[in-house]
Length: 521
Image (tube, rainbow, N blue to C red; front, side, top):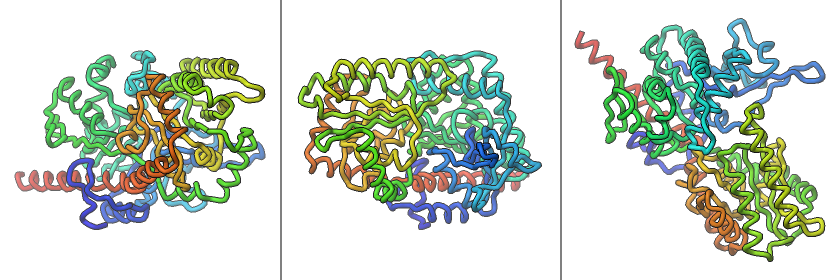
């Protein structure tokens, strides 16, 4: 990599070139070839499951996190530490609970952490997803904070830390931790092995100080994260929220200009790194023959007519995605423009998730009921405005649906980034289509060619969808060209390169500090 690829400040790069997977991996090898890399996340990159025929199948989950981190693991031949959740995971590991992956061409090692059903329930479902998730998304769903859940969360974080320390064996290593499930790990590592370089990326929003104070263990959460040498967020506003919290809620010295926090002689650099996708991959898939075939199959399945205007929604079933507001906006859209009756087709594809959590079960029932209500109100012969599909579909089918849409709607009430918006843009190899995008997503700060909207305003959302459907082709293509360039330039490998460059700075600083300490002694 050229020297111009080194960011000028924490989390910001002056490089606008199209970084590739190979370039990122070369940078990783050159920077950390002498340092073992340990990647840590709750979700594992490969899951082993028993099949009906008696065989064991290995699957790579559809996950932006996996896509983002695998180049790190492959380039360094490192170890990925994660919760072993597959029903055949125990059958495939060695005596150290590890397996080499990918199965066909192993390039790194996966070390699994075993958790009981009760631990998964309290640490993952309750504290992480019923507590921290709504807290961080400032969702109008009351977070659940129970002391027992926090105790189990601590215990699981301790378990992960012990596995990391075992893998590092008291030697220097680079530890890259992911997200809100493991916020206490770095502090434990710092106290046990100061030779480690610890980095953590917080994928979801970080709330403002007043919201954070409602969490009874906010100070312990912040103390845990300050064990990191580098702490990354999706946006500057989230990073500044954390700096403000560290300044006011714990004993620490915060330097806003240098974006760092000092506590007990240890410095944590805080940066913003907007995560992205592999533009070339999504663009290639969007232009493939398989997608062309799937588009024809969708047209048949949906009974689409050539003059119909298709709106597409595609996300995980979650109360942060603004799904109820979106449905009300579709109802309002038909009131605003009666000419759309019979011409408008909305396909909402949802992946069911967290079905054991009551809030998600209730949300599904509400979405299904409201969809039926709107369809009954506007039905005309065999036409219904909304087709709700709560099911898993292949990547090819999802891209084909994105390709068919005149408009894609992403109306999240709050999102750290939202990669569906970027996937829509990258998959539109035809250069057409419009994006209606919530202002409260990280993607809105980059995709300025989208029609930005307040998702809480049903009226504004309906008007934006109407404008998107009726927008002249020339304007659609101009906006799409602008957005595609943005996603291509700031792709997932540029995200990785920016983080790696700042880790280099941390390593150099720590080495200098060590040299000074040696001279002083």
